[in-house]
Length: 578
Image (cartoon, rainbow, N blue to C red; front, top):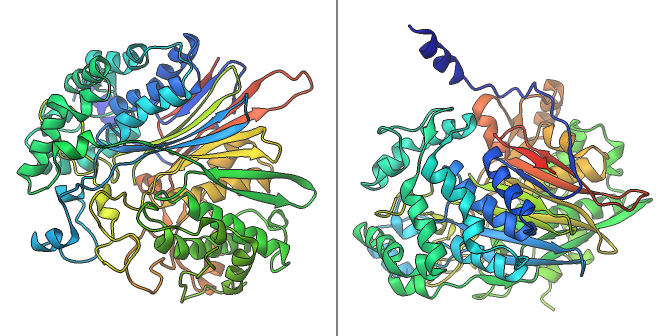
C-alpha cells in the first residue's frame, strides 16, 4: 500500500472523545459560530463588507447548504430570531412550509398510508420548502440594506462551483445517507462523488446547486417558487404519487412571528428572559421545562439547582423529569396555531406550571405522564451571528432526518425535506394532518436577554427532539453553574429517547434516557434505581446529543462592544470573529 493511500485510510478514522481543548473566541466587530468553518468565513466576508448579522446569517445558511447538505438545504425549512440592539427587541420568523392543498387525510389512507404518521421516505411527507422565501424575508425585514442578494450568495456559489474539502463528521453523515439518496430518485449522483459519498478531505463540487442559487439571485423568490426549479420539484413529487402542485409553491409565504418567552428568576441574581419561536416549533417545550424548574425551586421542592453537583444523579433526574413533563404537554399542544388556538399564555402561567410540579417525584420517575389542561383565558444546522452594531441573529436550518426524503429534483442540486412525517394521522388530534397546514416542527433557535432588554446570549442546539433538551441543559450550565460558554457546550449531555408525537392520550415520552459517555457510572446506577432506563452512548452515535453554538455579549467597564463565542465539539465547526 502506498504512503498516500495509507494516510487517506488513517484520515478516515473519526474520533469522538473530544480530547482537544477549545478556547472561547473573542471579537469586537462581529462573530460567526457554525458547524462548518467555510460557512463561518462566508458570514465574516459579508460582515467585513458592511453587512449586519441578518445579511451574514443568510450567507452562512447558503454556504451550509453547500458544505453540509446532509443536514440542511433549500429543499427544507428555517426559523430565525433577530435581536435589534437599537430597539432591544427580539423578532421572529417562521420559515416552515405547509402541506399540499390537494392532499387530505382521506387521500393518504386511500394511498395505503396507515399508522400514525407518513413514512419519511414517502414524498407525500414533503411540505412546501420554506427556506428560500425565509432567506429573502430575513434580508428584507432585518438586513442592513447595504448588501445585495448577489453579494450574500457569492461565497456559497464560489464553494459550490470551485469545490471544497468535505469535513470529517459531515463525511460520516453523508455516508450514512448514501443509500437514501440512491433509492429516492434518479439524481443521486448530483450529490455523490463518483457514485459514492465523499470522504473527508475530498473535494466536492455542486454545480447544479450553484445554478439554482443563480436563478434565485436573478429572479428572487420566483426563481424557486416558479420556473424550472418549481416545475422540477412538482414533477418529482407527482412522479412518486405525491399531490404537490405549482400553486402550492407559488402561494407559500413566510410568517413574521412574535416570539414567545419566559422570565427565569434566580435568587440573588439578575433575572433573564429566554426567547423561542412560537408553535408550530417546539421551543415551547424548553420554556415549559424551565418554568417547571423555576416553580420546583420556588416551592422548595428542590434546592436551587447550583446546590447540586453538576451532572449528579439528583441534578440529572430533576432536569429529565421537568423535560418529560414539558414534552407531555408539547406533544399535544404544539401544532399549527392557524388551525386551532394554543393557550401559550396559560401554559406558561405560574398557576399552571405550579400545578405541573405536582407530578414531580424526587427519587422516582413518573410512569404515567399526560398532558395538562390549562384554563383557556434530527439533523439540522444551527448557527449564530453578531455584528459591530450589537445585533444578533439566531438561525436554524434543516432538511429533517439528514437528507430529508433524499429525493433530488432534476437540475436543482438539493434534496426535499420530509417534515410532513411529523403530522399525526388521527383526525381528533390538534396536530392531525390537514391540507395547507404546518406540522409539529423540531427546529428552534433561541435568544437570552436580561430583564431590561440587553442581550445576554444568542444560542441554540441542533438535533431533532434533542433541541429543547439541549437548550435547557446549556441554559442551566450558563445561568446556574456560571460556566464559560465553551465549557457549557463541552460537558456530557443526556437525551430523552426520540419519539414522534401521536394521537394516543397516554404520554409517549419514553423513560429510556441516553447518556453521553463521560457521565459517572455510579450516577447512572443511581438513576436506574429511580426507574430511568439508562443507555450510554459513545463514538459517532454521540451526534444524537446535538451540536450547539453560543455567542455571548461581554459587558465591560470601558463600555466597548466585545463578543465571546463557542462552538460544539460534536460538530466540524468553530467560532471565528474579527
